[in-house]
Length: 68
Image: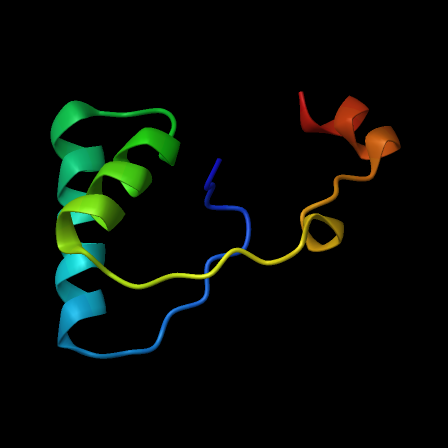
């Protein structure tokens, strides 16, 4: 599943519109999490994307204790 852990984007009009829409949705709903809105906006804006291998999306388990 796509997430916002490590987004990297090329700066252009399309990504600018995507980011503006994503921010507006988060602000308008007072959302506490951004994952669902990110995926919906990415789909609706039809931006191409790639998924990096899972080893780049690993969490250091011991760090979870300090994230509370």
